[in-house]
Length: 103
Figure (cartoon, rainbow, N blue to C red):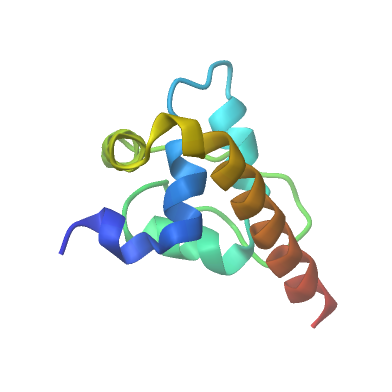
């Protein structure tokens, strides 16, 4: 099964919007994701392993496969939908991260 099918629609939309980001923007956006989502991306070899369940800063590194996954997610999404989907996906993932920290 292709990695893009394992991501779910929100995460796939989020990743699609990271295509062509410069200066570490994609990595910073990924660092805002909930720990469980980051672990999922690690397990799919989209990003290199990162420390989780802490407030300590860490650097996200997108793997070569991760770059391919981002390109594929973008290819599968209509361009006009990406901004709206990104906003909705980011809001949902931010809520999940906030809820995870309250536990």
